[in-house]
Length: 298
Image 1 (cartoon, one colour):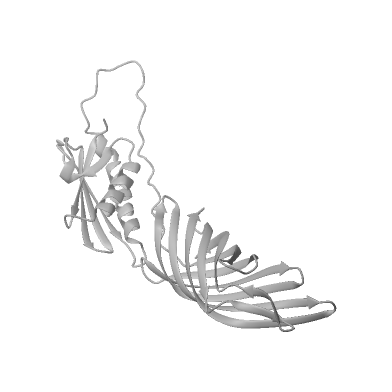
Image 2 (cartoon, rainbow, N blue to C red):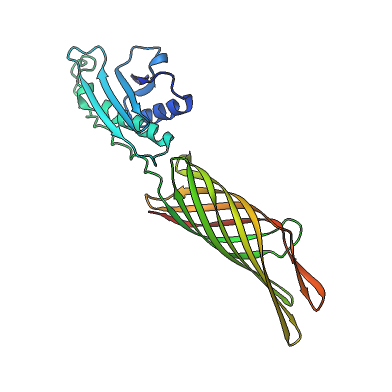
């Protein structure tokens, strides 16, 4: 069984989910030990790590070798910014503990060497430090869209340009512009949508995948062009509404990401398309849109 690093956190009784993220990151960064809470070690720890949160943006870390003839203590101070998500701060502290524990001085005082043997003993090098999570940044995304009304309305295809700007570790403002087209026999339709709203995000929902939830006000311009023989009749109208949507984000690198979205929209009633006194189509008052694309963080 791997040696144990006992981690003590102050102030005491941290949120279980945050403590679990810290311990998981610490263990992931080690090859020769595992990190457990000091409250439940169960065995004699090889090293002791003390994490002191001065405040939400400043953590002090001290790591010491337990039961050593010559005490070894290492320390590190970490400063965060207001835009760093709380869960990523705790993961960064866990990775830093792993880096300190991998110092060769902790392992030079290990158990007495075994009897000499003829075969060479491989040298264990310190594990490389895992990259610290990058801070949440503003993002611009370009996505292809498709969707339709829940009850009526033609299937539409188009694209979306979206901007996301965080203003805290959990919340962001966002705006988008999208354009979509649909074609039926004798009828061409076009939608232009502009939206503005707020959202909540989790930058590490699953490993490299983040998630966002958005609520936006929506202004839609729907236009229709009807062909009757050699005559063309064109109409357009603006309709207000709201949109509730979610995004999944897969970070390919520090800057580039892939994204997918699903939205439900509600408008102030469906918009009838009338030509020569007859209703020939209807633009949906409620529906769903789906999209996939790519983004860049800056």
